[in-house]
Length: 242
Image 1 (cartoon, rainbow, N blue to C red):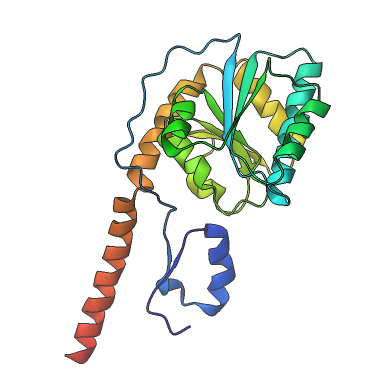
Image 2 (tube, rainbow, N blue to C red; image 1 turned 30 degrees about the horizontal axis):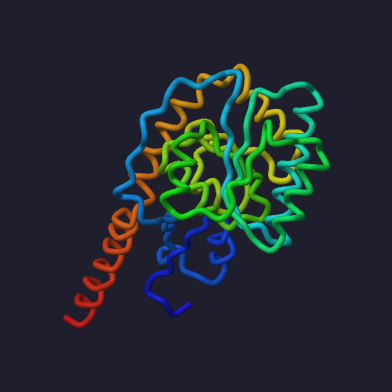
């Protein structure tokens, strides 16, 4: 109530702040990370017989596990429908890795379509992202998803659940696709479209994603927003003392 400015990284949180914060003092600050020097690799044409899917996530109980459950269920359904023109790389590790692996095994998904890359360095992760075609993550109760942001910075389109601050990172129908969070049918239907009739949009959406990341989500972009508002506060304070 007494702050001169309040910044939120999540537009959904801003709605909770409005009753106790002067709207003129409430500002959206887009999620940001150090991606200024990221180079977007030139990608070969997509092989329609094997679209490369990727995700990056901690393997822990709770919401992360729920997202993995959605992924395993959706990919298992595709396999049973003989839609196997994909390969999925999972980057990450954690205390529930055995359980996560078990989710995919239970769906009959084998190493023919699946690779667990484990814990990777930043450089290794970027190499995996550079060789992929689409980042997929259901984003159950995701605050905003830094992994989604980094995927876009690497030139990848994103398929994710529409929740929390995710829409502030992923622009639906421009840098990726947002579906109702936790809706396996919707997630699966959009993934199927990405593997078939919308396959040609993956590269253009990926280019849009890289452009958006560099424009809106760098440390420099955040600095500009913060600096602009702080200068206004200082000027107003100086005027009040005059």
